[in-house]
Structure formats: C-alpha cells, structure tokens
Length: 125
Image (cartoon, rainbow, N blue to C red; front, side):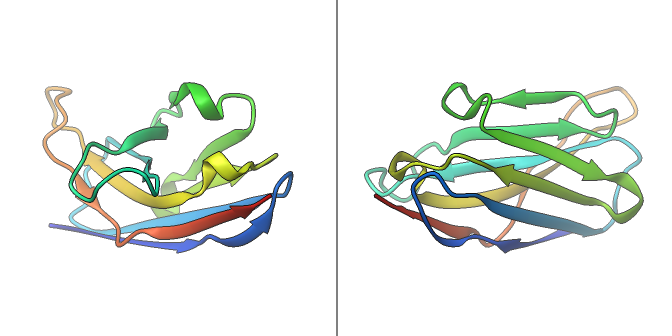
C-alpha cells in the first residue's frame, strides 16, 4: 500500500503563483509516476479529473494542454516527493488538485493509482 499526502494550495490573485507538494510513503517501487489531476467547480464529483502534470522517476514529464508553459512539475526521488510550481495563474485554474502516485511494475506496467486528499486552489480575478 502507498499513502499520498499533499500540501500547498490556497487563494491567490490572477497572475500569481502557488506551489503544491506531494509525498508518497509506504511500499514504494523503484519506478513510479507522480503528478496531479484537477477537478474544476463545474465538474461533478466522480467525473474524470483533468490531467495537470505527471513525472516519472526518470524525470519524463507530461502536461495538460491548458497548463503548458505556466506550470512546472519536478520531483526528488530520494524523498518520494513531487512539486508543482504554478505560475501566471488565472481563474480557470480554480480547482481541487489531487496528487496521484502510480506504481510501475518490473514489466513497465502501471499497476494502480493512489490518490491524495486534494488541495484547493482558488484564483481570484
């Protein structure tokens, strides 16, 4: 089992910046993916969350189209911690951001999703 704990978020004015952190603990495989998805206010709970950013243990990254060029994901493998730097925020970024941890098996297959409790990010205009 893996436990995921996230921190950061809050209220910021448009154009401002915030940083999210996410720490994974427990049975951590050598290879894994960490990142964030988000659920915006107009999306009902239980609906698919939108991709924000993902990063592998090898530092390969993937970003959602709406955050490219503004958000940067990084990680510290020794601490099993990922960071999301969010710059030039706008009201459309208002959402609950959920950290995810995805173990990768020795065969290179993602074997699950472990979610954090969610961090609220609110951007005022």
